[in-house]
Amino acid sequence: SRYINVAIGQLGPVNREDSRPLVINRMMKMMREAKALAADIIIYPELALTTFFPRWYMEKEEEIDQWFEKDMPGKETNPLFSLAKELKIGFYLGYAEKEIKNGVAHYYNSAVLVDKNADIIGKYRKVHLPGHSEHEPWRRFQHLEKRYFEPGDRFPVWSAFNGVMGMALCNDRRWPETYRVMGLQGAEMIFIGYNTPVHNAPAPQHDDLSLFHNTLSLQAGAYHNGCWVVGVAKAGCEEGIEQIGGSCIVAPSGEVVAACITKGDEVVVAHCDLDFCQIYKRTTFNFDLHRQPHAYKEITQY
Ligand code: ING
Image (tube, rainbow, N blue to C red):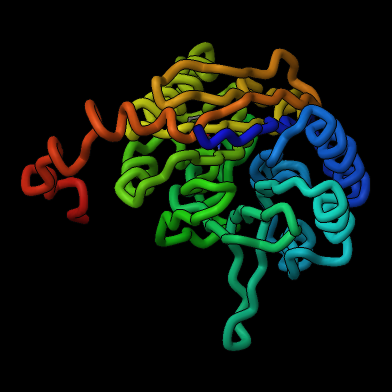
């Protein structure tokens, strides 16, 4: 057995006016709680440090820029990294990343995986950006991820926490390719933070299924790739917009082994055996034995 104690670090609403230090303090309180429950790692949501700002149409550069982290860790996130080092606990953190490359600013919806020494093991940039890029006033609220972020172009995995770990973000969890690309690299546990409004403007008839589609996506990804999947929400009514909770930890069997029961800040821990992946990866989902890539060419064609 290779056990890893995983803590869900579900966040309730973060309001537009909430400062980074205010949110970081909530996260530090949860980190202490997770450590008290013997967690090896705590998983925070997508864009955890701020309100889900893509819900608004913004044009001014400085109005958009305020939502992004220029450094990771930076002045305001350092206390979280220091506490992690002190407590010897790792974490996954979703945040808005600004990178200056050759004098040009680039903006990503990112996540970092941090080990028990508070060293950054890896960074992931969201590949599947949902929503739209121009103002669409017909919507109750905007979903402008295609406006504010550039997409990532890969799904890396990393050897860490005595296993093979992967990362994804929110809408990525709805696409089977996300899990399969990491599954083909041997992923044994995939962390996915999300901000998901109950109301989906293009298809309001799906609103009542928003929690079902969340769990279905996480369970399918886990089972189809014989790996653990951890989904963590920023939940609750944020700036008047209801976002789903549904944070949970799914085993390679597809079974939900732990779940939050509130839509606020909530820590839930599961004792996960990474070796449990093997009974699926060696049998039903033995990729080398059973997959037929020559028959799948449509998947990678544009
Ligand atoms: N949010 C939503 C998500 O994929 C969405 C967007 C909701 C798309 C419902 C389709 C249906 O969970 C983010 N941030 O990706």
